[in-house]
Amino acid sequence: MHYVILGLIQGLTEFLPVSSSGHLVIAQYLLGLQIPGVAFETFVHFGTLLAVIFLFRNDIKEIFLAFCKSLNKIYSPKKLLNHIRDDLQCKFAWLLVISTIPGALIGYYFNTTFEKLFGNPVVTSLMLIITGFCLFLTDKYLIQGSKKIKEINGVDAIFIGFAQALAIIPGISRSGFTIMMALSRKIDREFAAKYSFILSVPIIIGASIFKVKEIFHLDIDINLLLISGITAFLSGYWAMIFFIKMLTKFRLRLFSYYLWIIGIAVIFIYLT
View (cartoon, rainbow, N blue to C red):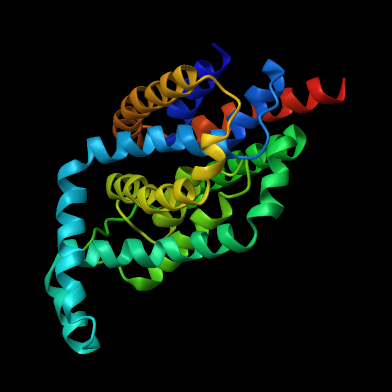
């Protein structure tokens, strides 16, 4: 039952700006579970990946096909750039590639270093508090932008990519930081959320491939593992729909208060 709860937590928090990895670390600590490494987290992340693919299936299909068609022009940079400029779905695809590179490199080379943090609820709680402050400041000082795919450029994609890379640290929200960075680059709120969610696809696929051997060696009943993944899929799907609607109507600082309460409470429990 505990693993199903973790799947639910993963699904509900992956797409809200509150750090799903941070919540999984804290939930394991409070439930008294010790799951070594990040293989289980990777598996339930795969459940939320399927939710993204299902919700944005038409967009992802068009983006993928446009990317594949552009590959036959890769031998000629000028033709490729012209094609990217003329085909917005192709541009979307290559921007996602650019945004994925920082997180992929940092995850590959510093995987062991960051993996050690997944057993430290205090560090995770501090990162949640920091995420809360970033959300609060973003909400207070950033003016809403209107840029969409046509106006976004490679520099925007690089900044968003480095924001995603920071989320390797448990407690730093991937969706939160990528959306905050997108907003700081004057990108439209709803499109910022869409970009952030679709951006999770390549990085989660990469992490799943990297950890696939460990997933098969998890000392967890296969039925519980599958149920936890399905739970992450269903809860993640509805969490995305909720957050996209909420982002256009409400303030990000509402999540700040929640993160501060959770972070401070866990540190207090741990120290006492």
